[in-house]
Length: 609
Image (cartoon, rainbow, N blue to C red; front, side, top):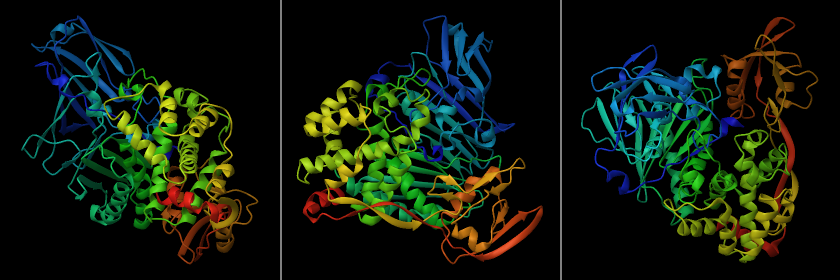
């Protein structure tokens, strides 16, 4: 589901070479104090040019979203000036680039930035990758939406000066080098490093703690103040300590920031739920109305995934990622690793560190298997990754979190069998990190050979057959290697989605949520007397329609049997208020359990490390 897409927005340290050329830098000023018509002024002081023309780009795409979002569409009144204030000729080449004539005389650029949160009905930008301008209250600065780069100059250092109301504080993994409480100055070694560090300005609500030698920042923007950073910190700290313990010696960053934006869910606020990953931070968007226990559970899954990106692609990545082109990108073949291994770790560490039970883990894997079957199971995964921006591959993107994680699981199991339980995929990622690391990208075509060299021939055969080939994976065969077999289990369902996929509801032309006809076997609706054709207008005094239908589904995931509930419906044109107790549907689904004690050692190695 696009809502849970996450990203691997990556930037890698350039080193001292970028600073060796004195005066060769890009200076940027962003004015968050004088906001006019919900727009922010950006001024760019360029490096020197030895050509008569220069091209300035705003990204078309950022790593990990794998969609062409064209952030240049939200830039207007773009102007170029010489040192005397005279305008230079500018031609807009496309949505995301401007060609400047007289570049040798170029002294500065100015332009206005519109934000994306308040117009989400007009575009498909994933909220955590978007921007917010709420004067005097909140600014979400995903820097790719505010700052661009000159062609051929993306490796130069950046200095960004941000003026802001004194009441607002910058949450970021960047270091402010200015003492003023109204002017912040940040530096980055190159453009990708700048884009890799989002900043959220809001009234200070944050916590900090240390996990081993890593500094963690949790910053929260809650429109009504209903959720505080201190509310979610205990569980976040417990989770991150477990992650660090699971990872062991892999430690690629000394600071990590979680920037949590809670949306009010209105038509002029962010609607996408999920996170955008960066090397040392993540931007997260969640509904403020979500119950705290449900919010914490979702943060555990979403943020843990993003945090594990410090392994891949931060420590292990290809040249396509290392030298990412924001406007004409060449995609890597290995999304199965960047997203699949990351998602697998986000689940495996929880059983490994005792945060969930073995049955919980099997249930999660079973759900991924079932959902992945909705995609073409014969699609070549490396080919899909390389062509992820194009149809039909882009429509299969969500499968990187499903089958991609299952690929990682099968490699893990195969390694455990081949090593008699001693080694698994975490060991592989350790070894790949040592072989490459953040500053040494690999060639896409070389990765499978390197993995085979570091592991076993059986792993190389698996990659050739199931990742670079078209053969569907027989998961039962791999589960059998660890003594696990398929069974049927009963689990709580969702009142509005059968097996979390098939809807019980639709919408009518009036944007009302309507129960589909001939619904059977839904204990929630049967208990309350909800019938096919009823329009669901409100639940527990909160109105719902097409605009916030996802909020209803998300809230319902936190309901428990016996909870008091009121549902306002419209039946045959007349409104009714139904009152009663929640009875969640129960569904029978495929599950797995351990049955072969002779494989116990391999299974324990797999799940407990």
